[in-house]
Image 1 (tube, rainbow, N blue to C red):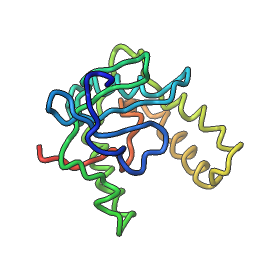
Image 2: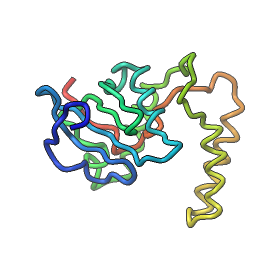
Image 3: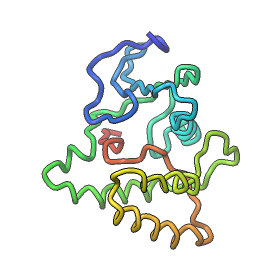
Image 4: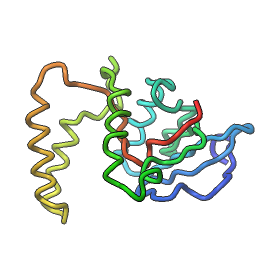
Amino acid sequence: GLFGWTFTKPPFPGIEFNFVAPAMMDGVPVVLKLAPPFERTEIYSEAKYLKVRNGEGGVRLIVEDRGRHAFLMERVLPGEALFNRFENAPADIVQPAIDVLRAVLRPPPADLTDVHSLDNWFENFRRYKETEFPRHYADKAFEIYERLSGQPGRTFYLHGDFHPGNIVTTDW
């Protein structure tokens, strides 16, 4: 297979866009992430983030294949997703997610190749008007963004796929 891995189980539940599945490489548990072959893809920025952080506050990037829009990363075990831990009380996810977010905040790297800015993300988010996305949520997001984005010292480097499904438990 790609990178010399083999599948061990079906893809992770709840994936919505990219293919993400547990695998094994040389007897070590890993995760394969594979993006659709679009011209512009966020998977490059995610791989860059993992490479720059090198395991500090997250998993390590093992290998990337840009031509296939894929990479392998470490797999943490037991690897229970935050949304599973709080499936009976979904609102309780917020505080642990904030705690993780605060713990991983770092300045952006000097080399901004493949780094997506929140300014660009919000510019693209303006397309919500062409969708069924609830206007009150978008208005609130833009209000917070406008208030915080102009403050000095508020530029941080974050993983572009930060959500409760990607915050997992570990025995580290």
